[in-house]
Amino acid sequence: MVNILILGPGAVGSLWATKLKLAGHNVALWGRSDASEQPLQLDDSSAMTFKHRHLPSLQSADLILVTVKAWQVMAAIEPLLPHIHSDTIILLMHNGMGTASQVEEKLTHNPIIVATTTHGAYKPHSQQVLHTGQGITQLGGFNAQGAQCEFLQAVLDHALPSVTWNPNIQQALWTKLAINCAINPLTAIHQCKNGELDDERFHQLLERITQELVDVMVEEGIEVTFDTLQQTIMNVIHATAENYSSMRQDVFHQRRTEIDYITGYLLQAAHKHQIDAAENAKLYQHIKQIEQSWTEQ
Image 1 (cartoon, rainbow, N blue to C red):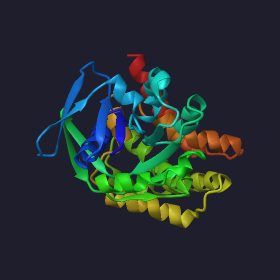
Image 2 (image 1 turned 60 degrees about the vertical axis):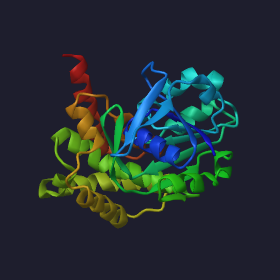
Image 3 (image 1 turned 45 degrees about the horizontal axis):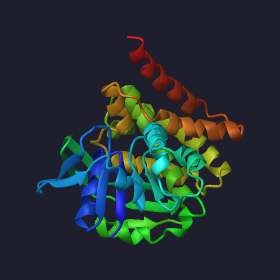
Image 4 (image 1 turned 90 degrees about the vertical axis):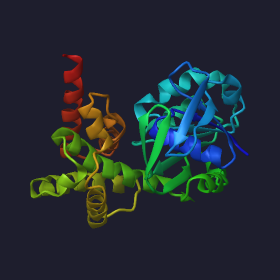
């Protein structure tokens, strides 16, 4: 049995919380509400009760699974820092890149693991989570200590398969980032479903976006070609044709997006390598202007 704290029990965090508890682990939640307990129901099963914001659960955690949005990670972790044991594993699971190095600066001795998942989850209300789509989860060590934690693959795979340990997790994260860079801003700007990006009016723009992504990824040491990345992006557009991207949903509901950790991260890498990423920069500025317009209302 592993002592696990879920930091950010949104849809994905709640899915993992319920699955890990059903697998026999000691699971607690840490969210924004002040309640000491949080009931959660997975699909139509009976509700489970979790300790919430319970300090001893934080102090004794073997694993903290961080499932808040990328821009929320540091604000969520910083109040907990005095209580996190130096052996506690920190597992980051969110869209975008760039938070692991920020966490490492604060938790210099802790094993840090980064993950990407394709499971679908939805919370119709605060006490229920629906598992809306089977997926796969990939884990890998971000730092040397994290690279020693391959045993977690079996723990997580038993709870919510399938989980694989990827020694080259940066390849997987960059591929996911590239997909998000191509799909999320365009669907947010045009307020459309993913499948609409297969329309002819987007083809040339998507090609230019993809070429910029390939140029940066190659400089970052990622094995990729234009043809393979373009095919990967189109496969996702087709497979998720009826879905709205998370960024489209955030813009629709006037919530802050993860653009700084998606396209923003890409642009930082492009700048480092002196690569012109004009098309992605335009998308970034457009989303930032949309966000800015809400605060000016």
